[in-house]
Length: 298
Image 1 (cartoon, one colour):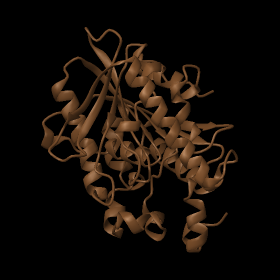
Image 2 (spheres, one colour):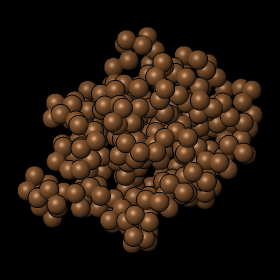
Image 3 (cartoon, one colour):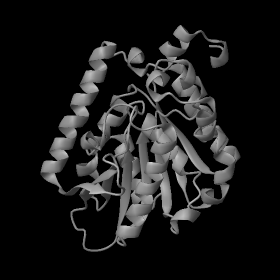
Image 4 (tube, helix red, strand yellow):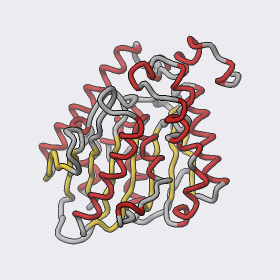
């Protein structure tokens, strides 16, 4: 496969349409199945765990959190902050709690972040909202012993942007100890040339300042304390796989502690849906991270 810059619009749209690469189902069916899976999983999570739903971290309607508390929240506990995907224009925090039961039973709080998806929200706003949500969390909940990020697809992009943020204006710096970035987009420039940007209406300048690939060097000081796991699916498109590989390499060259996990037998959607399963490799990685262990990708 050649450089993305040499592809036609049709070729780019093929590469950046994750549903077209799943061997399980027709593209429309795999998207519908994904929405059904995360919705059902979140309903189960809310029925089985202690929750604080729709907690506002800002004034906008979209600026709310769903918090899934650990089984014993009396002491300090780590928190896994989940940032949903949906190409910055679909899904919500309301269907993003499906991973909670497997983690709260291990003493981990899970927080699903809401943000203003497009067309209501733009890229700069979404990135700022995720940052604001983390600042709110650590200011409001002194029990948090460490923050671990987990983002899927567009959510992996937003989580990756957090790693390069300047926290000076908030007067607080979250203790981000790890990040699990799943099937993400780390260079937004290709998105400018496909249907996704019809809704985002993102400028070239916005794509540049919000591309994690271009922010890596500014994130070096945080690299000492934070471990990053970049995960990609066997049945992600070649472009999604390239982006994950190149972002992982960029982090490594900048001095971050980073691992690449290439998961066999999954596509862009079930790679994250399976977080509801105790035995799933990414669930296990979440447990390891939140317990202070290093990534184990071998």
